[in-house]
Structures are given as C-alpha cells and as structure tokens.
Image (tube, rainbow, N blue to C red; front, top):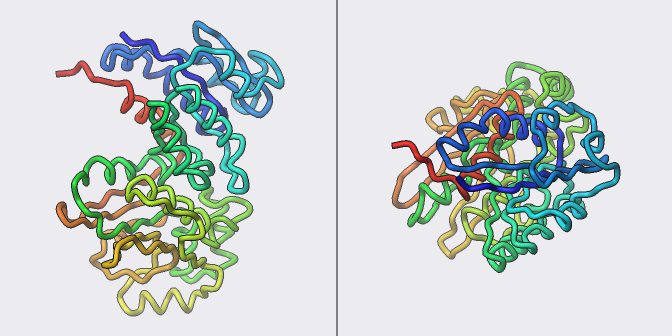
Length: 342
C-alpha cells in the first residue's frame, strides 16, 4: 500500500466533484491499485484547510459553494499550504485565466519546483506556459499530467502520446467546442445566430459571455495544449489561425448542407511537407463520410491520422462535470497506480 499525500487547489464544479470521486473510490484505489490517497490540504478563493493525516472527504465534497475556510482558515492560500505540508501531488482545478494563468500558474510552478507531481484540468497555465512547465517538471523528476484539460474526459492526449507511439501524426481534427457545435446545429435548423446563442446558453453548453466560444479562443487554447503535449511543439496562441462563427448566417449554414456536407467547428493540426504543423480553428464543411460528421451537437471528438496506424477517432458526450473531474483520478493512477487485478 502506497500512501499518497495530496493537495487540492480549487473547489468549484471540478474540484468538489473530484473529492467526491476520491471518497467513493477509496476502497477501489486501495484494493485494486494499492494507493491510499490522503487529502492533506485544500484551498479555494476563500481560504484553506490543512490536515496532516488527511481531511475527511465527504464534508469537503459536500461544501457545495461554501468555502473550505469553513473547515479551516480564511485567507489560507494554496501557496501557503504547499510551504507547510508534506505532499506528493498537487491537483489543480481553479478557473481558467487566459490573461495571467493565475492563480493556477503560480501554484503549478511552486508544486513542480518543490518536487510534487501535478495533475490539472486548468487550460490557462498550459496554454500560456506549457514549455516552461514541462521543462520544470523534467528538471525536478516529476510529472505534469493534464488529460482533462483538452476535450473533457475524452482521452485525447493519451491517444496521441501512448497509442500512436512511433508514428508520425499527419493530421489531428477535433470537434472541440460544445457551444459552437450546438449553435451551428441550431442555425442549420433555421435559427438566427443570436437565437442560437441564446439556445446554447439555455442548454448550458455556452457561458453568459459567449465570446471565448464564438470567436474561437476556447478551441485555440485546446489546440495549443494538444500540439505541445502530443506533437512536441512549442506552440503559442498566436501560432493558431482563428476564425469564429459570428459572421455566419442561417443561409451560409444551409448552403453547406445543401451540398451534402455538414458544417462543424474544427480545430486542426496538419503536418507540412517542409516540417512543422499548420494549426487552425474555424467552421469547416465536412463530407458525409468524415468521422466528425456523425457527431451530435453535444459531442466532443477527435480524429488522428498517422503514417503507421491509419485513422483513429474517439468521441464523448459529457453532460455534467463528473467525467472531467474523474480525469484527475485517471491521471493520478497513470503516475502511481499499478492494478493488482489479474
């Protein structure tokens, strides 16, 4: 049995559900994987709590919008906790900040610098400083895992890193943004753009401020992370050609379908003969036999084309945050877990 002392930053939809998953899967982790996970510290925007022998997980998972300061100390930050506890791994699940990457970026830097593994679902630090963080992890002999930061719990990064080992990836194509997929489907059914945005917001797949989605920034971020993690690039946000959907009309969408194609919002990386990859996001007319064409508006999916393994595609319909939260568990087990099942 290996004891793993964990610290968690962020107790929103992802973080609180992850604590619930840890609680529910406690016996499975011990019996099947030989891992005893203790949450020795946790912090959110209101404060933090420290417990060297491990916090009781059920009360933490049940906070539901209350700060963990209710179980600990107001104003206690994740950086203070990292200085005070003996920990092995940081789970980072704070909200995305594309301007500075904070507070996630500083927490990840501090954890890696102290020799902790890091598992995160936070796209901000990865989009802004992937190469730096990867180098910091390597320099300290620890791992940086983030399979839940790209397309929810879909194992997009895992497929590219593990299952295509030895191959040259010729093309990656992904239906990467639920809001844009839903909006385009509503417009294909005759809705105007503004009505379609409101329908997506009512459905829950689009934020009140739809800018990051409809202007393509969310897809850009995901593609940058994927390009760095799977293709080994040092890609930046500015390296991606970006086209949004705000200029489209129902007539534009209907014209694509009238030709027998489907209009999808696609993030793509295409291998170039001279080396490197062309990175782009935008609406694309796809033929009926393309793997992404069959996906519904609430699916995320990825298609890999390589020189050795042909075309591999995967998709998921994720209707609530528990699957994405569970990606933190999956990544932790990729570091520590060794199943005892035979």
